[in-house]
Amino acid sequence: MIDEITKRELARALSAQLSVKIQINSAERVHGGDINDTFRLETNEGRWFLKMNDARKYPGMFNRELDGLEELRQAGALAVPRPLCTGVAGNRGFLVTEYVEKGAAAPDFWESFAAGMARLHQQTQPYYGLQAANYIGSLKQYNTPYSSWPVFYAFNRLMPLARMAYDQHKMEQSVLRQMEQLCRRLPALFPDEPPALLHGDLWSGNFLVGTNGKACIFDPAVYYGHREMDMAMTRLFGGFDTRFYYTYQAIRPLESGWQQRIGLCQLYPLLVHLSLFGGSYYNDIKEILAVLN
Image (cartoon, rainbow, N blue to C red):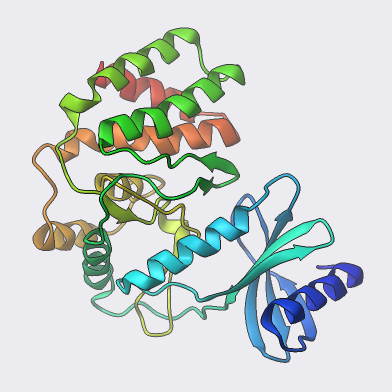
């Protein structure tokens, strides 16, 4: 639960942000991610969803998440929770969005979800990246713009986290060298595609079924990148229903050899999980590097 002092500070901050007097009647903890504290708020203005974390430890994290949600919403491809505001209550940063009620999946749920992802990936811009760095989980995600996807993937994704893992004593120097060798070969491995708007962290824990029976996506790590990154991410941690992949392929087929690049694209989220959680992710990374090198 949220203590009364934090609740009062949060109500004041929400009132100032939204220019209306907000009264928090209750704040019930709900299941969320591994990083933030999450709550269902009952207020005089309705039911909202709240995320909180240490504002000093993760400066700007929720501002960047709000930006990502807005970017996805503007694409109009899939349902996304409407962000209301961000701010600081005491030393706690917060993000408030609409509360999405869960429903039962429609018969064409996976086909509709895949069609929405295909539409999302049609959104493009001239460069890979984003105007500002953001977060994936609690890790900073670098989005320095590049015109080349292999260069972007090497300098903004693989090498920063590989070096972090090495500095954390979670990666041996020989494996770091393998990663460096792989990065030099990336231009020959990836097919050339225009930058696509990506969710950036699309696994089974970051969507739910809304009351309309369709997918609602959240907790993004948005950037413009190679669309195979999103598709490979969906195959981690259990994967999506096969109807999702068949439908996506029918609408917007991936380039030849995409099955062989799944591991290559999964290296980034695996490096994220290695830095955050350690454990078996290191073996997964070594197995992929052994195949690719």
